[in-house]
Length: 75
Ligand SMILES: [Zn+2]
Image 1 (cartoon, protein in one colour):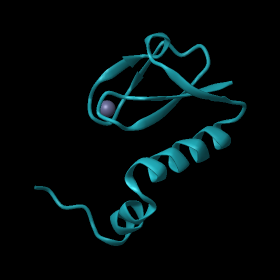
Image 2 (cartoon, rainbow, N blue to C red; image 1 turned 180 degrees about the horizontal axis):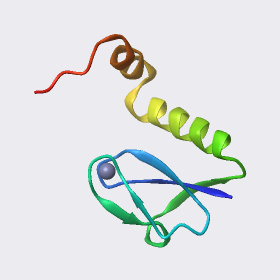
Image 3 (cartoon, rainbow, N blue to C red; image 1 turned 180 degrees about the vertical axis):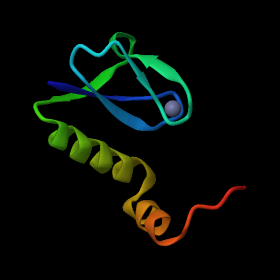
Image 4 (cartoon, rainbow, N blue to C red; image 1 turned 135 degrees about the vertical axis):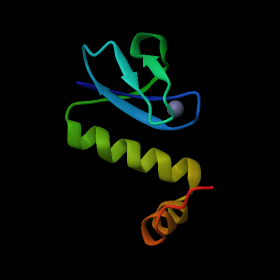
């Protein structure tokens, strides 16, 4: 079982059942038990797809397409 939840920064994350903390790419360590679980899925693949789908719903699919096309820049 994998849990889907969000960080305070807005990113959607997933973690395997039994994992106590998950570190977000923003640097924050999240206690999985304290997060609101949006969804529970069976496989890592499903979890990864769910995260991607949620990110697209939140930020819009075009943002992610652009991010893939344009090399990352430091601001
Ligand atoms: Zn974060």
